[in-house]
Structure formats: structure tokens, C-alpha cells
Length: 231
Image (cartoon, rainbow, N blue to C red; front, side):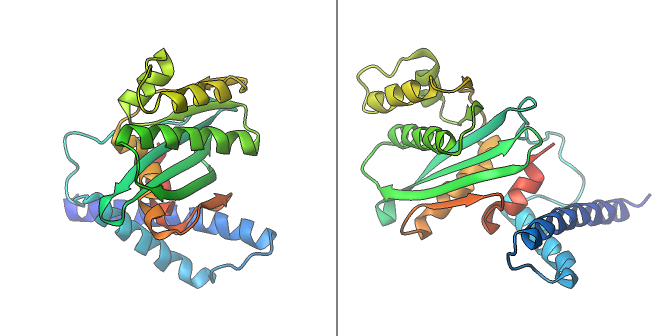
């Protein structure tokens, strides 16, 4: 088969997969009495989302590379995974925090995006992002949780209580105290490429004057990332 036809076929499959996800969201929105997108626009929206994703990831639609980017992995059944991240905007003197919660099927549960004055180090901000994640999960009542972040320094401090007298030591201690209330909790380290949804939410926080929270339906900025993150 001509490689160009294979690429086009893969592209169509991805568009149809996104369209199915959008139709599923539309059905839930109808059930809850929320505004919905006309069905005749679903395919074009799916195509636009795929193009946005490809543009952000700078993916070549030609032959696949020899090295495959690692992907986010689902937690065990009846557990939830929470990814957190922080971003800094020095030109705006702001920092952003992003948190996303997904269940064992990889389905979106909730998310937070918030900003704050940039008065802390990068490690401090990552610790604060983790604390926001723990607080958010406690508020919505989840009990068996995997908190995943890409800051090796913060994850190591959480797992080995090595923050000591560091500037974020008090935050780490607070996280550990709150986490003790869950039935099950772990803090594994992950790569940046597996933390892209939380990263996008943290970067989006620059545009918000106050914290934004979403349940059941993700914000537009992470829809395509969610679709391509689950394998």
C-alpha cells in the first residue's frame, strides 16, 4: 500500500475517534440540559482538534519515528490518577498551577487551573501544585489516589521526607499530613511528556484572574490532549 494512503487512513481513524468522544460529551450535555453543538459540526470540530494537537506536538504525519513518546498510563481499577504541574510567567510576575483528575478508564473527572503571584522558586511552585491537587481530591471525596508529578525534587521529598529546612519543607509536611487521610495514596514521578495535560492547564492559568474548576466536561484547551494521552 502507498504510504500516503496509510497516513490518510490513520488520520481519518483519529478524526472519527475524536468525533465519537465529542458525541459522547454531547449526549451527557443533553441529559444535563446544557447547550450542545449541532451534530453536523461534530466532524469538522474533530478535525480542528486533531490539527491543533498535531500543531502543538509538532508531529510529522509521515512515517512514525523510531522512538515512541511515552504516554500517560491508567491507574488500577477503582483508583484515580491525579496529575499536577506548575508553570512560571516571569514577564507577568505570575505562576500557574494545573491539576487534572482521571479515573481507571482514563476518563476525565475534574480539573483546576489557577494563578498566583510569582514569589516562589520552581520547586516551591511544584510543591504548591501538589498541595492543590491533594486539597482538590479531598474536596471531591476520592479515596484511592495516585498523585503524579514531573518534579523529581518534590516527589523525592514526598516519598522520603527529605525536604528538611528547604523553602517548601512546610508545604511537603502539609501534603503528607493531608494525604494520610486517604485510604490509599502514592506519589510516583513521571516524565514531562506524560504530564502534558496538567502542564497545559498550568500554562492556561496566565489568562485567568481567579481559579477555574471543571467537572465532568474538560475545558477546550485540553480536549485533544486527553484524547491522545490514553493508551
